[in-house]
Length: 192
Image (cartoon, rainbow, N blue to C red):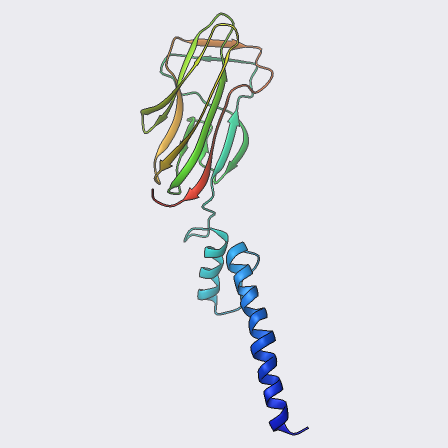
C-alpha cells in the first residue's frame, strides 16, 4: 500500500478510536478516582488529589465518625462533656475520645446525630453544642426512655461539637448494649 492511502486510515483510527478511549479514561479517572493519568509528577499528584478528594497535604478530606460507650456503667455530672470511648468509625480522626469533642477539619454540611438512654428512675437532659452554643436538646424520662436527634449543620474548619449533660448527675448501670451514640458525617464539602 502506498503511504497516501495509509495516512487517512491512521488519522481516522486516531481521531475516532484512540482519542475517545483516552478521553473516556481521563473522565473515569477524574470522576471516580480510579487511577492517575500519566503526566509529569506535579500535574499527576495534583490531579490525583483532586480526583480522590484529598487536601494539599495528601490527607483525605472526608469525615465520618460514630462512637458509643464501652463500659457497663457510666456516671456524669451536671455540665460534663459526655466522652464516648468505643469507636466504631473515625474516618479523618476528628473525634477525640479523651475530650469527647469532634473538631471539624473540612468546611461543609454535616449530618450529626446522637442518641441516649435514661437511667432507672432518672430524668436526663443533654444538649449537642457547637462552639459552646446549644444546637438541640435531648430529654429522657425516668423509665429507660431513649432520646435521639439528627441535625444538619453547615460547619467550618475548626468548629467543635460535643454533647453535655445539662440536668442533674446521671448514673446509668448495666449498659450492655450501646444505647448512647454520637455520630457525624460530611455530606457535602464547601462553604455554605
